[in-house]
Image 1 (cartoon, rainbow, N blue to C red):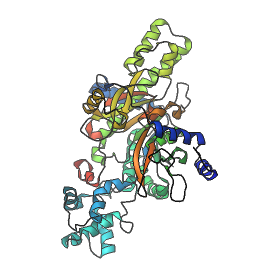
Image 2: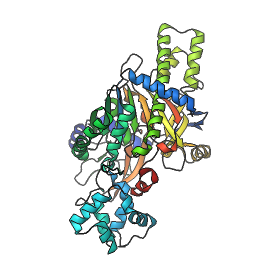
Image 3: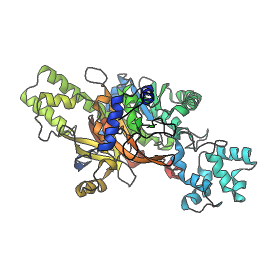
Image 4: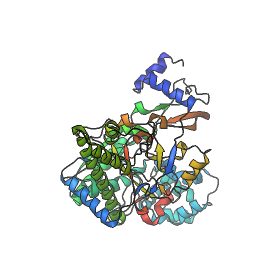
Length: 500
């Protein structure tokens, strides 16, 4: 591979090594191996479905843990632009028809008053068109309404991050997802009156996001009696990946410079690694509900956190026992805990003190999973690890060999879905933070086809944050109700009853 002096400077500016670039270009050539599956996880086989009595015990365990004053952080990946939410509306604005023709367009305009942003949109229509939404629709000027929602001179929703859109109506004014996450932080993640919330935001939206947070935080702090500590980070340039041509050579821009692309949400393991915390909740920016539906979400967040701290305490006790020197009976008891409670099956591996220590002394996560209702995305599986053991993982369809009939049957008949509802313990039994990038399975990246300036290119995504980036963590799945999962993938999802 011939890299010019200019290339090397460009690589160095991003904080990337030449060796990383060579590795990435090699990965384009070889691709990534599919994962070996043991089974789809199910209730009774890798997924815990706690009874009402057990739920109460876990909530109590979480409350008792919080009373000790740990540092709890709510981590919200919020850098995604909302443009994909409005794909259908962009098509309408750019299309030939002046009237709504598709079912999606008809629904959007017929129920437009139900959107939390209706008043704000009406105001920009009055300002820019001299008429409100109803008057514009009455004269069939639907495009003006849609354009004012999307374009910069209107609400600019086509370019803003999802976290900054008005999602839910309240008597005191509409709220954005960012605000709903601040409320959630106060309700289940506050410890000793402090709520730590961290947003990952893209560079171009950072100042706007910070200003909005500063404008709203005091109101919620007073309402919920907490003190907020709100922090922000950007995806690091050193986690960008080089783009390649179809022949696996570096893709170059018109000026001859190399093209780098964001490495996907897996890049955020670096951001997560810099969070000072004992426990970290992770939840996507768009999975929020209005206050009337929050009690269920809050209860189940406390449940999964209670499962986490209960199992972590047990793992820590066993690690201290191993330090002292465990008897044969004690080793058998620890092995049963690792296999039955942490769902890590040694298969053919030797089960000794070193093996048990390696499986206990690592970060731990409890993931809420919901019953599969046909949403696109990953699911919970028992899969083979690099060391021949089997453990729980969240897999995406891209990681599964579609030519393997047995695996495809597992994937299509899987009973549960991953809604990105995680709570993580990131310190060891001696109170030291784990180095999270050390637990990434680097063989679980993903290559996709994209284009730039009309030219085809291959893009490399790093192991996903809740997929390969957490592959070597202890993982526990807990079945949570569907009511806790309310993502907004298109603007019309905001018309669902859960967002009204």
